[in-house]
Image 1 (cartoon, rainbow, N blue to C red):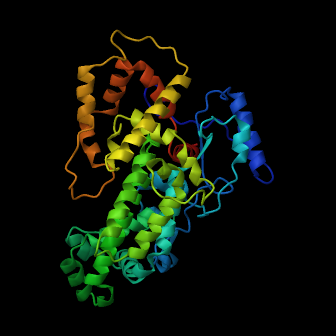
Image 2 (tube, rainbow, N blue to C red):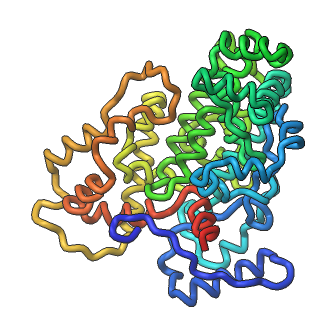
Image 3 (cartoon, one colour):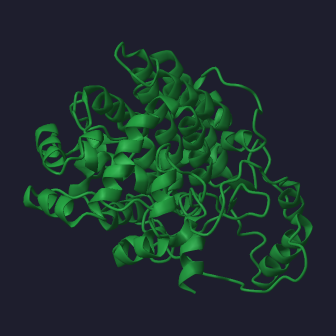
Length: 442
């Protein structure tokens, strides 16, 4: 963070000959940080989870879309994708989904890992979330027939001029799905079910494509499918942000998704129960270290990297982020919430005591300030919990009236010590997307 702006830089671009083993990568990493004298400035290292540290989404395809991608040329798909969409999503192309996780002992020996259950290396949050999505998709066999119709409709929209023109007359369109982005396929499903039945069915009947008509059962299955994966899609986009803190999103996001899935599972009319159960099970296993902080029953060390999410940075970061503070804990049981808050406060004191800083404090700084309190109260104001739009953090809608710059100036001028702590820990990204983004531009 430089002048209150998030920056990402490539420090080294070197060719490594021979096998890219963990030891070789660690040695090169150590050489670079020594060259730039960064050893005592590192907060955390975020890497991908695959054994060769590369991103992992090429084979993550929704059921029913396999034939779609066999018939639609990928190059044509890319040409018809907007430049902006291509720039934002090209990070994960030309790679494969792998559940294999790297033995990261090498990162512990490169630098001295912080004590008290703090880890030097953290897994990429986005990659772990994609693995949960993949586990859910594997259980989506019950939606195969309905998703196949969506894939066929998407194909028809880009191979039949008559169908495309009839949709356009009604102000509708079906976007191209992309093989390398599961949420691209997800958006295609959302777009199809947003077309009213009477409009879509009428067009298909006229074109003698009755086999593609979505019946009541299809619509119910697809609506449930979208509902189950909606927050995963939102989390994927949010946590890859470029100009704001993302590490503070991790814990609130996982709790939000967990509680949403539990509500879905308790619904008496959910058609994709097996998918919901698979997502719940995977989420608890892959993020067990984090969820254990909230006294949630989870498996222990089922995946090697899952315990890394117990790092207290995921608890302290939301507290330092004025968008969240402690509001994200409201859905916990009251007694549990109090214990978690006590844990967060203890972590805050520990982190603060280790911070080395030298700042000139303006008169009245780091003291109670009524005006600032009024601002932060407004920033954490509750919104109607019955809001119909499913989103992770509906209460954030009220914060849009206060820009990031305004919040930063308030914290910097009135609470310089807290500002220094925030600079250190909110600079850690939740995912490896920032470096992949800057690397692709380089």
